[in-house]
Length: 598
Image (cartoon, rainbow, N blue to C red):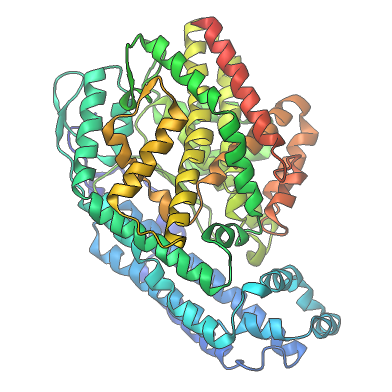
């Protein structure tokens, strides 16, 4: 492992994503910004006349689609540049510029939805008969009408849209602090050599078989976060207050209801998850007991939760090896799927390794009209191979939707955003288990499988419970601060991990390092998606072609229906607790299998 991170200009070109696939240079980006302004000015001339006749409605909707597509494209271009080195001031300025333009445009076109809502539905039906081209927008208009109870007058919608850039501030501040400004100290690695702790290295160090390394990394990491705890609490409080403002403005009963309704999901789905997890928390306690036994520890601490339970099996997996394994593991999804994976691997869709200033973690993102992009911070571990499979699942979900839907229906709702990614992970795990002949290696893989349930179902549900309760606290008038956030987080942590886990004092600060708390009730979807993916992956392996075709139909559906309904295409009904319980039953079987091996 390198002792200090390399700078962006030191990264090999083949290990970077090719942003030139979007624009050859920033001058083209600037030109498109001017085109967005020009088209927006044309649309604003129709204020008060959107539904005067069929031609007006078609003109406005056609141009809105072009504006949305262009601004999405330009935002993604600037954001990819920014994320590859968030210390680059030129790219900081570009990111700020496009977001400012987005806020301005949303304000200027905010009159459109209220005018469509004021128009009688029968009149719009008549326009569609008069101009068949309007049929393209039927689903879009239906979605606008669904949100009628929460849509404001044109004047207030304009003011609300003007707050968009301001509402982004908590996340911007949090990202600047945690990705750029926070500086961690030096540690001694397994070889007693100095190494600097970074966000990207933190989990890798917690995976170390050397307990001293794990403990040192844990304590140094939270030592730094504790120094900024009051600041981060203030930033998070601002985020929740922003959500309160928006939900109250639109007449929702709670922030939770407002957040899930944006994806046309019932709050009951959120509550089904937490209720089912609560009834099955004993499975996580059983996992903790097994981990404690496997590690041979008298006390299990939170810094022991990432290191493999099965010692002496972990090995480095190069990026090239990871790609080859993923291609084999995902072969059940068909030749066309594998061909797309190869295209992504071979044609620089992926930014592979960590560098100074690069955004931590991993993601897939992109815009209609160009292939998706994947950000990685690859470090030659089994976990990162799974992360690569995960992010390519996102990428191909986007690819299938983009190539099968017009722009306005291409962007699937976030509720289903983690299904394809997690399906890839499960197929990879099943492939590795099937081809494993060594009991110790199999136990290692089963450990990793259980870590998936722990990290993607229980941990995300833990986050979801914290997010639900902190928002409820703010809604009831209670201020959020470092003390009550840390107290609540530790209480929830203790419930989830049980009495055999020492919930170290530092774990109370973990809420401060979770960027997803700035995504407005996002995290629960990791858990629901993991449970849906369990069902889909096993159907693919057991039923073959019919299941694969149904799954690809789901991948290709974009946002053409409510996400819960689209999942039913792939055979999963999340309006019930059944998929969640079924996935947890699978965890139970994996636990039993590992218990027999150790």
